[in-house]
Amino acid sequence: MTARSLESGAPARERAASPSLWSRIWQNHAPGYLFLLPWLIGFFGLTIGPIVTSFYLSFTDFDLLTSPDWVGANNYVRMFTADPKFWASMRVTVIFVIFSVPLKLAFALAVALLLNRGMRGLPLYRALFYLPSLLGASVAIAILWRQIFARDGLVNDFLSVFGIAGPSWISNPQYSLWTIIILAVWQFGSPMIIFLAGLRQIPQDMYEAASLDGAGKWRQFIKITLPLLTPVVFFNAIIQTIEAFKSFTPAFIISGGTGNPINSTLFYTLYLYQEAFGFFRMGYASALAWVLLALVGMFTAFSFLTSKYWVHYDE
Amino acid sequence: MSDVSNRLTVVGERQLTPMQRKLISVLTHVALLAVSVLMLYPLLWLLAASFRPENEIFTSASIWPSSWSIDSYIRGWNGLRTSFGTFYINSFIISGLSVLGNVMACSMAAYAFARLDFKFKNFWFAMMLMTLMLPYQVTLIPQYVLFRQLGWVNTFLPLVVPKFLAADGFFIFLMVQFFRGLPKELDEAAQMDGCSPWRIYWKIIIPLSMPVLATAAIFTFIWTWDDFFGPLIYLSEMKTYTVMLGLRTFTDSTGESDYGGLFAMSVLSIVPIFLFFLFFQRLLIEGIATTGMKR
Image (tube, rainbow over the protein chains, first blue to last red):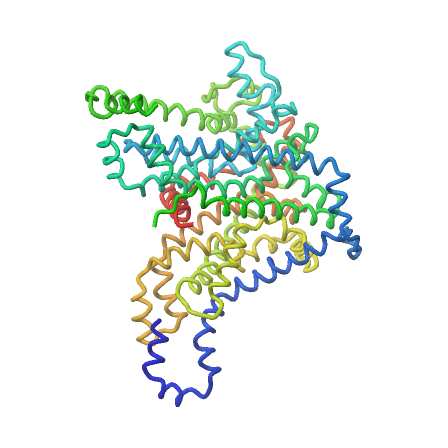
């Protein structure tokens, strides 16, 4: 702003002093680009370049040692028509996303509402609930989880108090995925913090007015809190869904890298890892990555397109 | 339905005796405490198990060992061919360099986006936001091929160099939000006095932005420390392993027999994260709250 007004204020001097347009362009734009330079190098070298390459590789057979062989759409055709593991991993990931994200958000919102009543000790509770979020992505926690849900683990110790002999949750294909979903829900802390921040933004006088009009707590929640909170719900849902699609470490550690029992924890990312770095089928793995991108992209686009019908933007 | 809730409010809001208010407050605390205990129990159990004598680990669900022992820590520390000391040093080097790279490169990019004017700025900013949504799997294989050709496999470079190129857009975004909140008059005054953008960045913006830089530094440290996937694909020699990779190897090789050692090392692996949590939780929580709100 300032630079521009200075220019227009003294056009004659500018023209006389500067030998050319070029030095002015340099002065106005170069600093920005210089500061942006590291990011630009990374953007082209580590993002755009690899994206293009990855798209190309997805149409090839590539084992890393010999140069890529063009195979047309074969990888994609094989994936959708002749690869049961692809479908298994897709199923596992979709189930994981569909259950872990809403459960996590519901839990986060419920606790945030409890905490938002002007409680004493709020910072302490908030910190305690946040801790699992911070630690949860760690290998150590995945190891702990494997132990908790083992046949002689903590969960079954508790169940035995009630005379129930629980199975080995980890090695039973019916339950194994659920242990990982529970692990994800356990980390509800960071969306909870975002919900809390959102709840703080809702003007208190709206509730006072509503309560004078005789609206009960539940109606206040449905008519005021929830609509005004939809932008935050939307944000949390998008972030958590993308994170859920990318989840890798828990499934890898809990299943020992296999995705077993009978592929019940074969997350899409885990399958991609196996194809790429277990069998060195880099072309096929690239195709898998592009299908994942398409999936995440479609989800995001769908969310943004439908958001205008349910997300309340207050201007 | 609404009738019922109306009546409920009348009872709930206006006719609450102090006694009832107190009761509701106590009940809320009880509920919250119950949830806290349920959530933290596994962590406390892990801590207790790591201090139990080996033969007692699975005999008790309590979080208080009947007798204390640090044998597990001693066994675990040297449980693999390479000691966990080496893994710790590696993890600290990688995390430390990542912090340096991220803070430098991201603050520079954020300064350009928040404060400087240049052609196509909005376009680049939109591109940066797009990278936030991009699943890393899409760039994974070509990046691996690239780093392999550069001879960087089994070095820390593939894990560290991207940080110096501001590859993590989240932190740029975080800092842009903060920089935009600083009074613009400061830059303008400095510019009048003939300060170059570099000096404004270094002498004004950076010193005023310590909270956000600290937040970025802490998150970078924690995320890099925690990272499993990167080290898993780039580091295959044990002397280059990070703590997380060491732990995973432990589960493969000795973990089935030495649970004590495994738990002890698991505890040690999250101690640095826990310390950050202990001392900087305000910054962490504010960081999440602000980026969340402003997207």
